[in-house]
Length: 246
Image 1 (cartoon, rainbow, N blue to C red):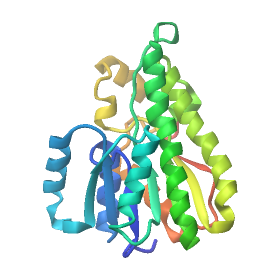
Image 2 (cartoon, rainbow, N blue to C red):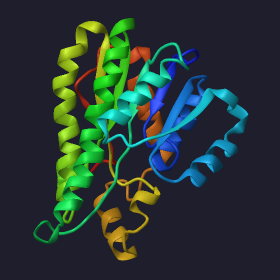
Image 3 (cartoon, one colour):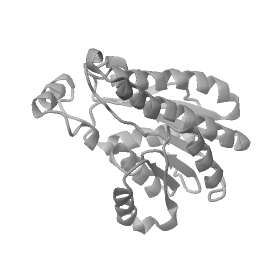
């Protein structure tokens, strides 16, 4: 694959977990990366310090992707800092697990707002910028959970399945402008997002994976880089599973 020199990348939720791995992967390929986050200033600043060797190629911005006005303000500001937007990775995501019959309406709403509405908000404004240059790559971090429907994750599964449906529609709308829209569907990946799972549940999940292990952040980041590359120009509206064979 070609490098990402002189390309500008936005990674939502880009300071921790899979998002951090994606941010680092693009920085190592020469890109300028805007990594967004929603809450923890201390952790974000520590992340910035740990990657100080990249200097002004790493830009941090704090806002809530589920809020349309905050997304619009972000894009209005960022276009004064970087000349163009080549790549958007919609990685912001949360879990609020519970059995469907016991799930609070607020937990349903919050997960759908961040995971799905956040993808809509960011994609909407990114497309407006990408169309000007007749080029762009949008990659949504979905999940195999959207297809499997794991117990206790009705809200999460619905949001991830929704990302794929959104991508299929958007990909058709922007294809003539040389903008591709695809999804990565990770399986079980070693991050803090699943760190709260009970040990016995982790063992059971690993048994279901044909490779008998969880994936790594680096393995997911490699898949993202492929779909973001110029070589992936004829791939759009699809989902690449990174699941160890699930």
